[in-house]
Image (cartoon, rainbow, N blue to C red; front, top):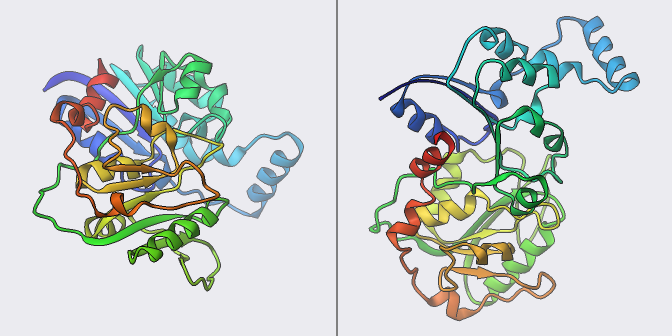
Length: 316
């Protein structure tokens, strides 16, 4: 175990970064950890609520954001760390990032969303010694360092035999109609599917199942275990970085159906395992893809996308 102190701050609603925390704790003497997604805020009284509302309307300042995460700053600003890693630094104010910057000489950020999706990420690059991003376009445009997401799961045993079905879960947005087209194509081939769409209001749909509560990660993994195919309709036009669905497919040896043509540039891409929907207006999944078996990824390529290697890169 290395005699180093690490500050790790993430924004994690699904538990993906638990594996990063565990890996850091296995390597370093001290890891201070915060998950900003789990921090709640309650107004002290009606007057504070009014103050925050008026500040946002007339000055554009989000006082709620400042007060919500101030407990982290108060607890850490007087300490010193060998490295500080922040996921989603955009949730902090400039003043808070300046305070965190002073705790270390190795201040690192990781972006798992594109800057076009969260524009404030562009404004906070200047606070960091290094900024990693999973979005290749942002890497080129803003001089960042490319680092994709990772396989947060342990390699799964090959004895797990899935059903001949497909799984997808997503929010109700402009991508839903494409998911319907995938459903129709699979149904025409006699394929079963479990397609869930999150929406605040219940809806009846002959092809999709609308849910009002966000699926937790354990529920998602159960469906991935049970199905042979994972469907990933990425936020095209907004970001092209690979989602965690891609890496879940790798861990469970599941075939992937995706709209993200950028996946073809990765060394693990195999058209036997990954079908790219090139034309979202006409979706047709070939029977040859649905009927063929998964082909193993070479171990040396698989290792490049593990949690262990991701932490190696971040901490080097």
